[in-house]
Image (tube, rainbow, N blue to C red; front, side, top):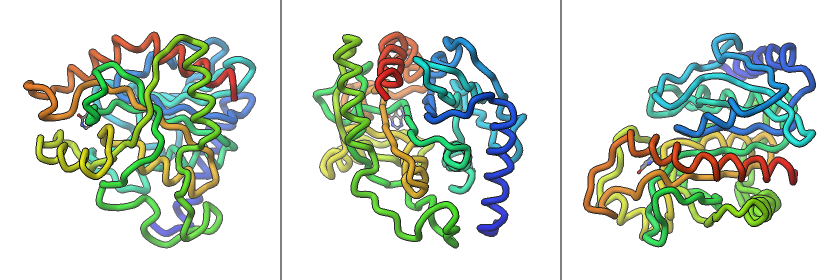
Length: 275
Ligand code: HPA
């Protein structure tokens, strides 16, 4: 896919979203596995199934609904994406970050990326919410590989502050005011789809990771490439492999997400209120 084609597809998708969504969104929220309920709680919403947006990838992972909801939350127009394309599904990186790029071209200035993650930091417990302070890109590639389209961003974008300090402070303030406990940490993004081995988790802990997951990192890089401010929030749905004497199952990820969704939704709402 040439850079010109890609930008054309992104703009076609952005135009289709803008044609249907009413007042354009200034903020976008991507909901991770099992966290999609937030989209169903919104009033004054326009729902656009992913299949209606040209070139938009459709995710088939259980726990991902596959729709874009644009709604007004505390006076702010927000695009909520339930379901994302994962690298482990076999999509190329351009496809994985397509939705991020469409949101940016549609005028979004702040992107809140949420995910389900395994807890590596032994001070965490399943159900904890972690504000991402930084990430380790261990996916083996980067969404910016290939010809750079200057219309999207620079060839060598700075990654000194992928996760905005301003938005992290807002997340902390929202957590305090809503009575939701949050922790902070470093997210390691891996290719997946197999969960990690206990040896891999010990290695990730040694290199500074607090949580591990299979998403978010490419989207955060693409968003920064385009000058969008990023906030990342992990729901620690399970302790990572080898931390507890039990096997990992995807159903636990969904069950934990379901258990904490009240706190998670209150946190998101509190953040949007303060933007
Ligand atoms: N590892 C990787 N990805 C995950 C995990 C995990 O333990 N839990 C939820 N997503």
